[in-house]
Length: 434
Image: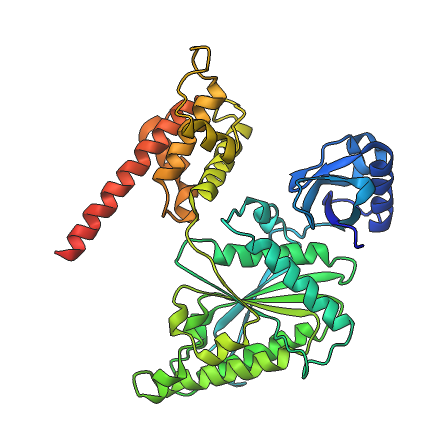
């Protein structure tokens, strides 16, 4: 019987030159001697700082997901995989162009940006993303499966996969951010297999040239540059195409005359390049779309995973807002307070309890958690992007000033800000209708 796997990620200090295997051995020895169980999806604070080597060279240790339903896992019954990584500085971003010719003065188009991974700019983003389903785990499992099949030399002509993912849904739901965070996570998890990672973000809109019929050539030139990166088999390359509908408009529309034929050339060029990349083990193509119905069927058919990323349900809204409050508590803008989890707050609300069973007032923690639960229900249908802006809107409009504010005051201010936002949207919709 296969034992469950739990992942530990240890981030090295920026100045550390210690070998990864030495850090891994020291951390494993500490776990074996001092830790009986681990809580999944949490920071590890169980005394590893007492080990001199770890204290000097490690910035933090995080427990990732586990292949078991339980959030607490026993080390004696689990295989622990330890990943050691060091982030690149924020400045390690490059841009490159895809020109239309070799002559001086030719049109140069900023076609993509390249970010070295793991990157400090994306650190911690994966943990901050909260969804109503298991999309993050499904993506990680998909990558693990493709690597396992590739290592086993499974014949692509018999068992097919294209190393292509399409995330679609309304704007503001975190599709692009999830892609960047996944690229970072893969660079960490595959650090023993690949010496470095790269995230290539393609500027879809820039690949349409003002010169008729040249857009297909721009796509070809861009992917020839990407192929050069993929040729380095010591690195893992993630290609991100945001708003992919810009490049993959349905060819039926083009052939029907409602779209320029240049768009048809772009779709054909992109599909050809993707078909070439699927044979490379060290590449993954992530795409996002707000208008999936506009995408060519041949592209959709090539996607191994087609995942809908919708607006967060109340449970996810609660988690997002709780994480915002936790961050404000960390920097002392909000008085520290232990918040209940979603299930406990929901149970408390279902009981209709505004006082304790003995008639005394609810604790500050329970009272604040109830307010947060009510706020999460009020915010249903709001995008994650908007939710994370809520604290700054609430503070600027209703709190202001400096110093530490009570959690209750913050929640009241956010509730008022949401009510105002709903009113503004209703007035905007009414104005548009008129």
